[in-house]
Image (cartoon, rainbow, N blue to C red; front, side, top):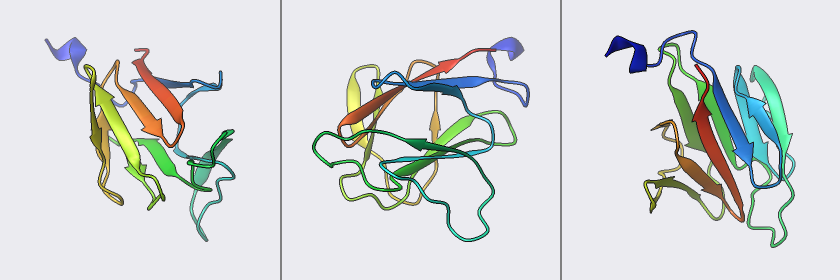
Amino acid sequence: EARQRPNAATRWRVTFDTGESLVVEGLTLVGRRPEPRAGEPVRHLLPLRSQDMSLSKTHAQLQVAPDGVLVVLDRGSTNGTFLVRQGAARPLPAGRATTLADGDRVRFGDREMSVVRES
């Protein structure tokens, strides 16, 4: 059914195990002290606490693609980014965007994020 497919009006909310939650709009950087690269049009910087320092300074980025899907990209983090889908975890390749689905969880070092499609 067409209504199940994301579109440009789709809203994606991510919620972290630290309590932070936001609707992803534009480029969002996640890490201990995320910093954009020169000229990068970042909308949100989301600093997260890391007890064991397994979270990189700028660990990963999130953004909604033009077709309405939410993508995550590991920015060359030290400890990697893992997609947890239906209970199975797999490492994500650094520098390559991965499409997320409603209900996915993503691990960044010692932090975990859940993904919800709101519309």
